[in-house]
Image (cartoon, rainbow, N blue to C red; front, top):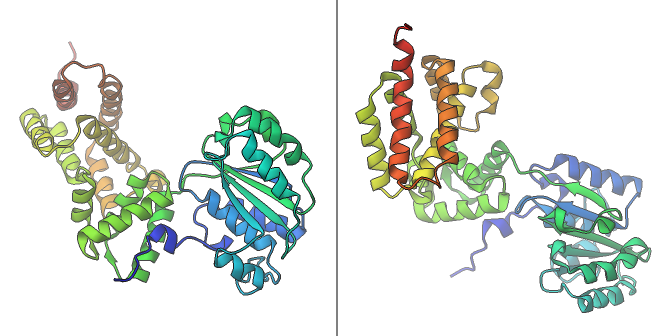
Length: 371
């Protein structure tokens, strides 16, 4: 059997152009290379799985490349690039601050920094999870970070910027990475599906992208799982079944029940979902997002805020035409109120049922004559 390589590693970007969702950061780094204005220290901040370490590796490879392309990308052909791609480069050092967080670990790093590179111009030190360093280790690192040798460049990555000392922050160029948008994630997953010969529905990929919550690495891991589950045929039904996500169709049915005041039908639908093992608070969160999507679908100017596929976008647009705006605003307010108080409720099922009863009563209360 061939060794399987997960998509997060197999399709890891190796050029600035292939990085997804971080155009402003990659453009700034390429401009710095073009103008030869490289700082001695960089700090890459942001949530997990958005490309911090990947960009650090690409940047390290590019500044040591012997034959940059016209777009200031690494050529992937010179000795420096080939050694980096084969994981045998002596110019790029990756350290894990979680396992080297003491003063002794920093002392070893300082001794390494003194040695000039054997090939290329720069020795690049990528320190991952730098917020894990102890305060004494940070203090020992300060002087080297402020005045390193001309050949040394430090790139630090962290998910918790607030834990880093201000004295360290003041010595770095700080880049804040964004969560990757759902549309960008879906487009990248479509590209991978084509490369792997996998047939995938757009709505299914959209569910994967939303489940990943802006982290491309998480999206690729979920993609691999769903491919294995669905046998290279990724459909919306199989995706929500595997990921244990409530079908949006149920929320559309509930909205019709709310508008028609069909309290019994709404409670029966909730009972069916709970019987299948869905979490009650997950149901409230999904209902809030559904009502928000309907409200957004009322105005053509806000339709682009819908993070769903084309088919569901049309359904939200049709449902928005049936729902009065005051109903949507009041329903959203109720969902938010019940979501906040969910944990404190002694009977959580009754808490959710009461929410549905209140939602079914909104339209009928509006129709009552005012005395």
